[in-house]
Image 1 (cartoon, rainbow, N blue to C red):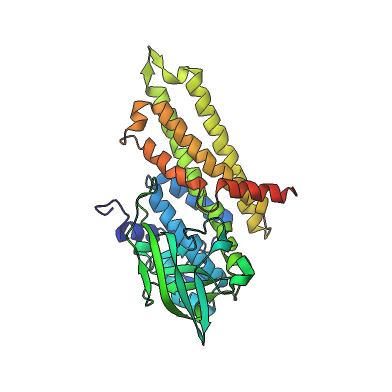
Image 2 (cartoon, rainbow, N blue to C red):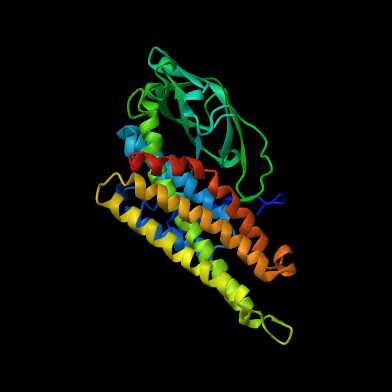
Length: 351
């Protein structure tokens, strides 16, 4: 960690050495070539074993929101030039889509990409770009045809060295503190048309494609975090004594732990099923939405349960419980809020 608590290139290098920065990228570009379920199982173990959920998030955001869009939708020239470095960890990826006025509402995006000869000129500001201060490659979403709404959004892979691209200072967050996030400004950034992912107007579909990876495999890390919290509270409740007996002898405590275990297993199986169906080539929209919702809200509740069971020790930083809770809190917001997942579920039910 740096003095301000952000991850370092050494941290990143350790993840890369384990193959985590390229798990699902095709092997021909230096990746692991894993499918959804195998990737999720690996990330679950990562989240369980790594106390720094910020590092887990940073690595997986790099993979699913930057490397995978390039792998699945980039031209061969772009894939060959970019993916080996992203997989090896020599390059760090970031995703630039969120704006101050366009979070869940992508149609409100104001960043524009205007065709100019063989290039596109990108102008706009992205407000919440994780990994931005250390990123080398940005997946950028911009409107090429504003009149068409989300059907007029296109995606580009943009190098940090592009003139006119400026990264702001990292801002403070309630959780995932080791991931540096910042505003990114595009002031007339000229990129070649070959930097476009897919075709013009395909940006929304490309983003949804990346979200299939992120809402399943990234959130597998939160399954690991929840299991880590479960192990911690079981151990603590079995050892901590109050009023002459273990606190686990109190049903208020033991039942809370039992429900934590129930939510964990239900969320895990929902996520595994969603990944399996994606591996079979199914859309699995309902499964992905249910899994993301169950895992994220379950992780937050697990953090609250752990703080309550640890009591005063859970409020202090030494036990790591309050940090896990803070790291879980953003999970119900990023990659589509809980409310967006509920809307997806309702839509898939035909309501």
